[in-house]
Length: 366
Image 1 (cartoon, rainbow, N blue to C red):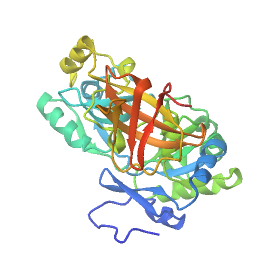
Image 2: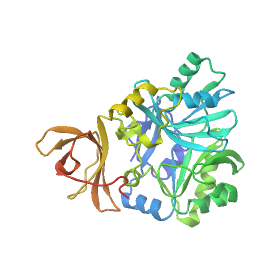
Image 3: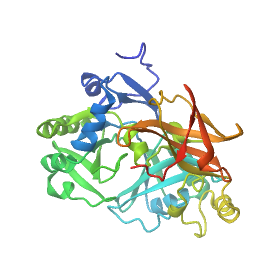
Image 4: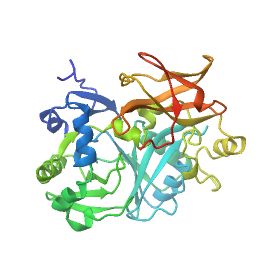
């Protein structure tokens, strides 16, 4: 059942009508765009399709901040706390983007589909505006714009079989974190071996929204023999695998070292946004840290906001950023952000339906 009103001020991806026909009934607003999250099924069906077969997601809300011109790579390197100056054509790299205080603004997959083009495929933030302002301030020879590129994700162990049918062996055989051009149903696309799951999978970026639905239809048809199911991004599987999203239930005004991303950062480069603040965190140690927790009992209710985490004596020590029932572990799992000195063996999550005593668990959970 659709929401009472779909607002005209919120954009719709090129696949919006296709997702309605597939049964989409619950949406979130992401980058000013509707993104379908639920199709009204038992969530175990969607989970099984992802881990056993193949799924297709409308992630057209995942926008591309495009940097184009001679200084595109230099600007990209300045935007991110992870080194990008050596990103080759056809390569992809995960990185957060931070503000000048070192606080995470968004998480991105950065693609270099051409020598003079870099895409920041970003989570829910107006990254194009941020990059435009920085480019103007720096005087970079680069054009910054939101590209007319609405991706979809093909995820699951049979994703390569589907990709081979529509894009050929070169696309199906892309190495992890590599991208390249491919023609699907006569439409020029970029395909990358990336995605919001650790299952085998691809993100498909049609070049232009007008014919993007033709790509969707071709993938759906090619996926039928493999049991393809149109779903939303699978939150349970993502949390099990330690995958997050800064703007969807994870942003607690944290820096990437607190978020557990410290090993990905390249902080000894000459200059980038947030450099001095992040170096100070590295030197002094983070005030908080990310921990994994598990607990028994009834499955968690839906998490609509961060839940408090307290010590055994009731003292607040942090928040639960993600909390779901894991189908793989058959237990409740929590990703928490807690004070650096908090003992993870003595934590209580104040869930919406009451307190739960937890025990620590390594991340990722699965």
